[in-house]
Image (tube, rainbow, N blue to C red):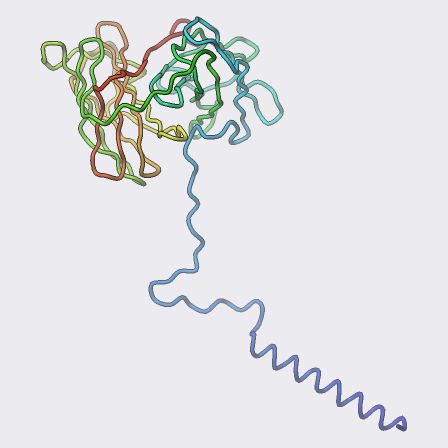
Length: 312
C-alpha cells in the first residue's frame, strides 16, 4: 500500500471512530443533563434520615460515656462512677441544667423490672459518682441524660453494667391500665402510636380511692416520666405538658407527650412526689395496637430513687 492509500485508510478509520462516539453520546445524553422529571406520584428525593433513638450509643456528637464502674454485687451497697469525655478525651465539666439538674442518671435492668433514677454528684475533675443498691443479678443499662453547656438540645448516652450474683430470669409484667405503689393507685389514659407524638395522662389516687390533689413539684413538673423500649432499651424523649412553679401543689392528673420510634413493648416509669417523698409507678405499654396499659401483676418492678443528696 502506497503512502496515499495509507493516509486514506487512516482517515476513514478515524471518521468511523468519531461517528461511533457521536452515536453513543446521542444515545446516552450529556453527563450533566438534568434527570427526566419523575412520573406522577414518584420522587427522586433521597429517603429522609431517621435519627436513632436515644441511649443506644456510648458515643455521640463527640461525647463519650466512660463508665468506670462496670460491675456491682447484687443486693449490696455500691458506688457508681463515670465520666463524660469530649472528642479529645478530656472530662466534660460544663453542663446546662435540665429539669432542675445538670445530669440525670437512669439505671435499668435489661428485663425492665428494676429501675433507679439517680442524681449523682460531680467532682471538680469531672467524675460523677452516686451510691446505689441493685437488688437482682443480671445485665443492666446505665443512661446519662444531660445537656452540654451551650448545646441546642440534650443528649442521652448509654453503657452496660453487670450486677453479679445468682441470676433468675424474670418476665416483663403484662399490660394493665393501673399500677399501685405504697398505697397509691395510678391510672394511665392514652396510648403509644409508632412514629408520632402521643399524649399520656396519669391520674393518682390515694388508698381510699380519692384523687390526690397535693402532688408536689419534682424536677420542674408534677411528675417525671422515663420510657424504655423492651429489647434494646431505647430511651424515649418524654416531655411534661405542665410546668410546676414554686412549692404549689396540683393533681391528680399529670400529662406528657411521648414520641415512640417503632411498634413494640415499652416500659414507662412515672415519678411523682407526695408528702416530700418520691414514688415510682411502672407500666407496661404496647405501641402499635391502639392500647396503652400499665401493670399491677406480680412481680412488681423494683423502683426507687437513691443518691439524691448533694445535687450539683
